[in-house]
Image (cartoon, rainbow, N blue to C red; front, side, top):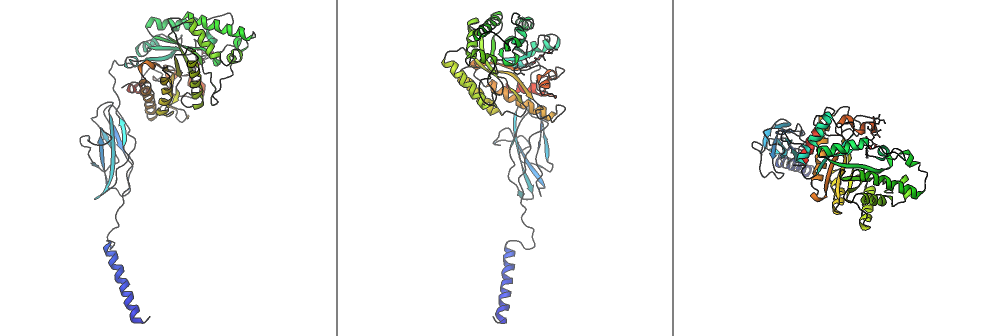
Length: 451
Ligand code: G3I
């Protein structure tokens, strides 16, 4: 290739390069800024009239545009919050209505360049109950229950029970090991005190529980008689107790926790060993014979999270319905955590009771705030998480058709007296009132769940 042609080609190529860089503006002008989309965080510092919106910093963003609306579609905007320009990464939104849903989103800006919208955050301002609002008044379609002890029915216990609750359950003193401590002894002292307290104060009494492997007295575990003699003894015990409280106790957990975890099999309790696999049905028939009106419940724990147990219990219930074995309701104990199980799973399991036209009892609600033992005091964040879970549980319960409602019972009054501390060996705050009878966020979550 001769020299002239080579020169001509190099000039041509040089020309071509300068033309293209000019057309893409790459001359010496800045490359186009690309703005990432902000991430909007969960609202914080939520009160009945305000919350704090915040979002992540976006690289090269000079400012942000904040939208706040009462509808998730942003068809309308809160005054002053239609693309409000801000340089900070958070904004206190004030002057809001209580117990109201709000939505916010944000964009990042650099000059004329604007990012796409962030995710949308939904938040609800706190609910201010009327000063004289109480749990039992707010829950006008079902009983609000609490687990009680015969030695704690006076003073501030009494005041709080009569003010807030419309049902009581004996936490431990209406179980066989207390009421029937030996073959020829019945001790109804504590049970009578609790039932009379209910009668005197017009508070419903739920009986808990006639047959439970964990409250079986030793003399029953070591029963030496024949299987028939055992069955006769159980029939006599159930008849004695149910007859004693006929017309005073509205309902009984006749059999409690009879299904094993995970396997769905019947526990191999002394009752099953002596009376056979159909012992539950027999016990239900003993109760019905003693009291034609008392509500008969089957009660168990992990009924949301243990699908095998849930399926086994509903298979048993369907068998009872098919065989006309008396059963009126199912109790989900609801020993849950602030972050588990999910509302949808609680709803799905609850629907299985309603589908069978039975009564639903959330019978022993407590909501662990410290399931992972990661806090040593109840933090504001964890307290709000607990509140949200309580609200969800109450929303699910309150959505049940009225004919299927019965009671939502919390398993204790004050955090300082929860069974969980002894059981797990470390501190937790699972109830609606703190150790000084103060209403917690969880209490207001209960009320908000009824709105
Ligand atoms: O109050 C007495 C005390 O005076 C005595 O010194 C002490 C020593 O025996 O006992 C204390 O009573 C204990 C009572 O809890 C009060 O704390 C009983 O022994 C103890 O058996 C009882 O435990 C109860 C447990 O059931 C067994 O009945 C728990 O309070 C109660 O929360 C727990 O509840 C069960 C439900 O019935 C079924 N579902 C699970 C739930 C939690 O385990």
